[in-house]
Length: 354
Image (spheres, rainbow, N blue to C red):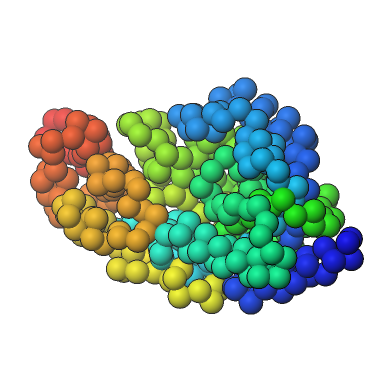
């Protein structure tokens, strides 16, 4: 029987790669060490307003509590990098343009990955018969990175992202929880970050408070995506022209010199969002926003917070008549949240005496 499951595990890895996943590994369900680290992170309130991180009891750290009967976790990664670091840097260095985290430029990865995982599960079912399973991609209380680490896909770097040896960190993770007793792969027990602290030094808001520790409340990805209310004033200048997420810690990571561009058409930029002008984006009404972000992870942000983020970026842009005019056109927006950020942005360009 053990030999049958070893053979099935090899088949699963081959099928996963046929479906476009660059790596496939298998983990057991023992996350005791990760559970203690996760609890310590929550105790420090580093999760901010992400209350969902503290809900669900043990379901996040004990897979069988989330999906009863789970014995093994199939962990997979799929690369999404759509362009070179030089092209990304060029957008960041142009304050007239808005920078969107590269994972969000294409089709919503949740849907793309889950669909592939379902296809893999059906393939397994065709050989193994009916079995219990559930697929995930950043869609439920799952400790994706510790599971991927246990499955041998990489180590968790100082920026808290998973890094694959010779492949970097520009990838999505997905999981299949299953009641099949598959043989686990050896975990990656050693960090290969060494003495490097590039990610800590580059972080605009100093959100990586220590190696392997992220205070999400300071992270630009949290501030521009997860945070529902006003962006704290002390962080607004540091946000620069980042209007949805931040990739700085990945762009500077030496391991990402080895990263490959994605072969998935679904992850390529759509609607010119890889190098958009801030003024153009700020002029989108809600209908345009919904149309331009259809099928994208960006749509979850909503038009109000979209304008909030762009207002901050316009406040950080060089002063010009066109920037000031664009901001003034939103001064009477029905949202108090938008109004407050527009007023702040204008204050960066117009002195009180003028």
